[in-house]
Image 1 (cartoon, rainbow, N blue to C red):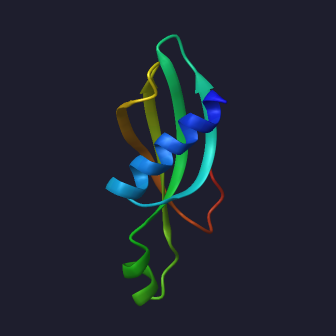
Image 2 (image 1 turned 90 degrees about the vertical axis):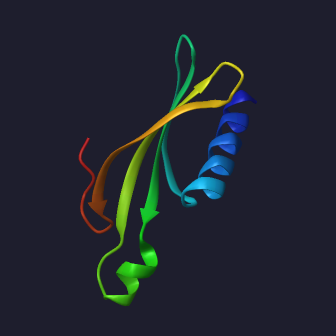
Length: 86
């Protein structure tokens, strides 16, 4: 059940403070909590108005054992139509 709680916490945080999550890439446990990697659509209105492909941001989120977000960082940007790099 913890994974579901982690997902809900991350979705809530991104919806309130950044942009809704487009895709959840991975969830991993760590010694101190959880690492989550997600993709978020960036600047979708701007890109639509200029007939350009959407930009996807990849984020790394860290949660502690109490499932509180303690850090997040954008790892990169790519066009939505491009193939993600591993």
